Image 1 (cartoon, rainbow, N blue to C red):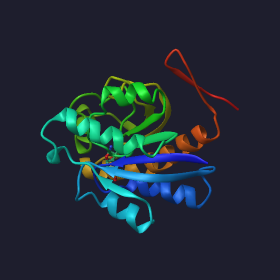
Image 2: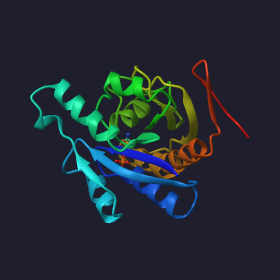
Image 3: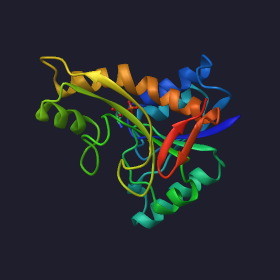
Image 4: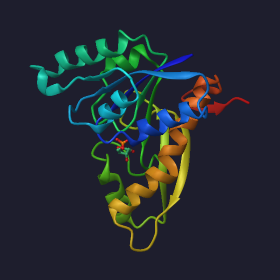
Length: 208
Ligand code: GRF
C-alpha cells in the first residue's frame, strides 16, 4: 500500500481528484495518510477531514523564522513515513533538507507545459496570465519530481490544453485544471504506485 502525504495551499481540487481516483481504483493500492497545508483557511483541509484523513496546518506565520517552520514542516511529513509526497497546489518552498531526504519522491503539479511559464513568480493564476499575454495557442499541465530548483525536476507527465478565443486567465485556469491537472496527477501517482517510473540522468522513462 503506497502511503502518500499531500500538501495543499488552496481549494484542494487536485487533492480531490486524487481522493476520487483512489476511490474508483484509478490509483492502485494507495492511501493518503495526511494532508498538510500552510494555510489554515485552505478548503483542501476540509476535503481531508470530510474524507476522514488526518489534516494538519503548519503555517509559517506560527513560527519565528523560516528555519523553525521548515523543521516543523519536515517533522509533520517524516513522522508519517510516507512513500510519496504530492504537492497539489502547494505554494511554499520545499526545504532543501526534505528534497535531499526524498529524492524523486516529491511530485508537483504545475499548470503549464514546463519549461514554459514556470519558475519563480509563475504560480496559480499568474501562469495563465503569462500564457495569455504571450499569445500561446496551446498550454497545459505538467507533473514532475521536485528538485532543488523551481519547477525544474524531471518531467513525469504532461497534457496539452487549447487556449480558446476570449479566454480569460480564470477560464483558462479552470480548463487546465479540468482537462489536464485532475487527470495527469492521479495518473502519475498510479504510475509511481506501480513502480513504472524510472529516472536516469534526470530523465524519466515509463516502464511497461
Ligand atoms: C491549480 O491551478 C494548481 O495547478 C496550482 O494551484 C491551483 C489550485 O489547485 N498549483 P487546487 O485546487 O488547490 O488543487
